[in-house]
Length: 603
Image (cartoon, rainbow, N blue to C red; front, side, top):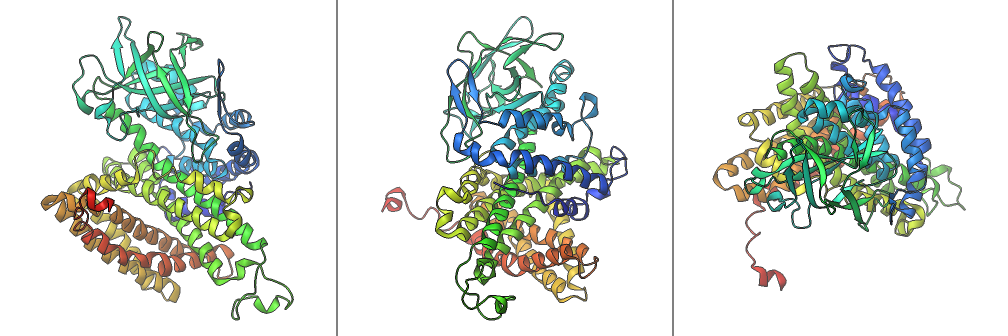
C-alpha cells in the first residue's frame, strides 16, 4: 500500500489553525520555528511512506504469531522497521531532556503519530503504548524507577504496555482481581491474568515494561483499592543491564477483525511464583496514575482515527482517478474533453466527488481537533504562567473525549465510504480498501469506548469551572464565525453563517444537558453520544473555517489555498449542516429508551 503524509496540511494545521506557532520561540520552545516543524514532518514522512507503508498489507496478511518457547513474533519486516524508527530518534521527540528526550512540543509528536498509524496502524500501536507508559512513569514514578527505565523507554530501546482489562473486568474495574504482595526488599509479587494487552509480547525490542493494575492484600474494595505496578519482562540489574526473565508471559493471542500485525495478548503474571514488580505512585492510588496514561492514549487513539481516515481517503482518491466507468453528466468540468467512445474516470461523477469531499473534509476537521488538543496540552505543560497552564489544561480536558470519539467514529465512516467508492472491488480484499475499515473498527472501542467518552464529556467536562470552560470555547468559535461572516468573500461568509447556526444548536443543547445533569441525569446521559457528535461537528467547522480564513490571505492562484477554502465550504454546507438534526436526539432521545421491556424488545 502507498501512503504519502500530507505534510503541508499537517504543518499548516499545527502552526496556523491549532496555534502551535504561539508557543514557538518562547520558554521551553525557544528554538522552535514553523520551518523546524515542517522539516521534522518531512523527515518523518520518508520513514512512514518508504519503510512502514510497504509493510501494512503484508503485515495484515501474515499477522503476529505466538511460537512455543519463543514468544510472540511480529510480521516480517516489523522488527527491522522498528530499529530504523528507534535510530531516527522518533520515540524521544517530545520527551523531557532530563532522560534523553528532545523536548519538542507534544503536538508535533501527535502529528508524527498520525504518520506512523496512517502508514501502518498495526505498527503504530506500539509507540502509542510506550508513550503512555512514559507519561505515567514521568508523572508518578519514584526517582529510582524513572532513572532506571525512562531513558530506555524514551529512546525506544524498550517498549511499554498498559495492563487493565481482565476476563471479568472490562470498563468496570471494580471487579479487578490481580494481586500484588509486598516483599521485604520493597518489590511486589504480582499474580493474575490480563487480556487485550497490545504488544504484550513481541520481538521488536529487548525489553517490555508492563504497567499493571493490581490489588494489595489489604486493599479496599472497588476502584479505591487499585494500585499500579511496573513489571518488566526482563528484570533490570543495578547497572542498567538486563537480568533474568520475569514471571510475565503471553499465553495466547486474540484473533481479531483487524490490526492483524499487532499482537493482542493474553498475559499471565505469576504462574511460577509471582512476577516481580515495583509500585508506581501511592498504594491504592493506581487508577489516578493509570488515567495519566489513558488520557494521553485517548488523544493518540483519536489521532489514529485521523490516520486511518487519511489513508483510506488517499486509497479511494487514487482508485477514483484510475477507475473508468460511465459518462459524466453535462456541466461537470472536463466532461467535454472525454471522447464519445470512451468512459470517464469515476472521479468526474458528482456522487463520487461528493463522497471524496466528505472523506477529505471530515479527516481535516478531525485532524484539527486532535492537533488543537495537543497544543492545549503543550500550553498546560509549558505555558509561560500558571494561568496559561490552567487554561491549557482545561481546554485539553474538554477536547480530549471529542478528539477520541468524534475522530474514531469519523474514521469508521470514512473507511466505509472508501469501500463504497471502490464498489464491489472494495468488498474483496484484493484492493486493500477493506483493511482500512477492519482496522478502523477497533478505534471507537478501545481506550474507553466512545459511549464512555460521551459520558465523560457530559458528566465531567461540561461542568468544569462551573461551565465556564465550555462557554469560553463556544465564545472562541463564535468569534471565528463572525470574522468569516463579515468578510467580503461569499465562500467565507457562507462558512461563517453555517458555523453560527451550528453554534446556536450547540448552545441550546449544552444548556439542556447542563440542566438535566442536575434534575434528571439519566436524560443527560441518554443524549450524551449525539451531543458529543454535535460538539465535534461544530468544533470541526470552527477549525476548518479558521483555516479557510488563514488561507484566504494566500495568493488566489495558490492551489493549497483553493483546497482549504473549498474543503471548508463543503464541510459547512454538507457536513456541519447535520448539526441541526442532532438536537432532537440530544434533547428528546430519552423518552422512548425504556418504554419497551426485555420481552417487548425481543418481539
